[in-house]
Length: 84
Length: 421
Image (cartoon, rainbow over the protein chains, first blue to last red):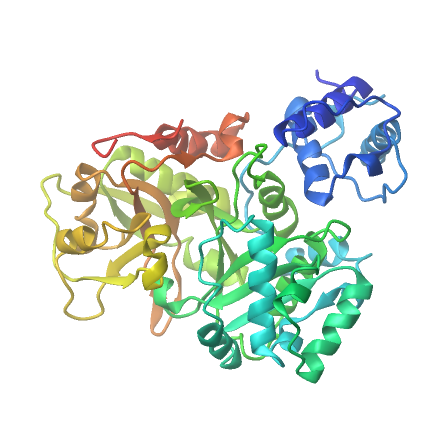
């Protein structure tokens, strides 16, 4: 059964960056989201990649200014726990 | 950590059974609970105060969004301003509160900022058009959507406007029972921003009804995008009732019958599929008379737009000659009524001539009863590459799986099945 891991989230950000042609943009757990130049549509594409991995729906209603990829992952896990 | 499968809803790829009016109202209200539209939106009714500015600002945003590779009807400012003046179009804008505050003054005091000034504004826009020309009475369309605004998500402004429209707050736009949307859905590339996120907004938040694919427009990068054909209803309960008792529907094959049945079941439940009695028309049909070419796009944009053919109210022409006349269009779409064999018998001819059953337009309220359920047969212009929906590569289950199996078999890998390839 697929589970949401931090590595999945990092890979999802890398995939969306690669789709945009930003192949040299390195990301890790401590990458600050604000530095990626993403808008809401880009973050939605990250969720689409993760949903495909999980086979289930994700949502993220919290504000993410100043957050890192690790924070983003923790928010997603918390939202899943809330649903559970 | 929780296991994902134990805690979240089944993944919806293209759509779900349409919500009742009350359930939809609740869901939209919840989605907008933290959204302050007043500070970040200029409503279409405010934009009506300065039609020329609305047109110029919309064109500026869309050209920047699509990197000057945007070929829909947005640049003929005098004509479009007149359409806005006559309340045939509504134009929404959104953006940072400080910018919106300034632009709001322009709308209210009749200002005429320069094009250079407009090009500095990082705003978003979406339009609502009266679309009787293509679909018939009672139809509008959500279109002309683009955004250069990175700090206000499009979901809030767009959903707020749809909610206002559905509850009748836009007094000049209360006659429509259906609003069509053809959201982009292609995968993002380095050169072209895709539509996966916008598509997700339609599936999850707006909850528009999926009725198939519309490979209609030649878009960014010289590619025909195989767009979704989706609908939003002012009264979803009435549309559900109308389409849950259709009876005989005439199609060209068992495969087409399966697609129509699956789309009815996806949107209205198994009872709608059960009420459908599929009938197969004669295979040796000809291109009958009684049709009209109702839309071709503006003269200078015809090669970028679809030609739409539908039954003529009276008289009309032979279908084959209309299809030939539409050869310049990016694609040709023929709307075929399915409830009687007379019109429906043209479908084998369409199939033999490279058209594919791409979408269904369900029955709608009309004077004296309902307008017939329509099959949308499409044929993109030969030799033009197209971009398939991002979700063609996704897993799906149940009815969604069956619908996607059919659509993938028709539109995949930039080519089309059948004689037109």
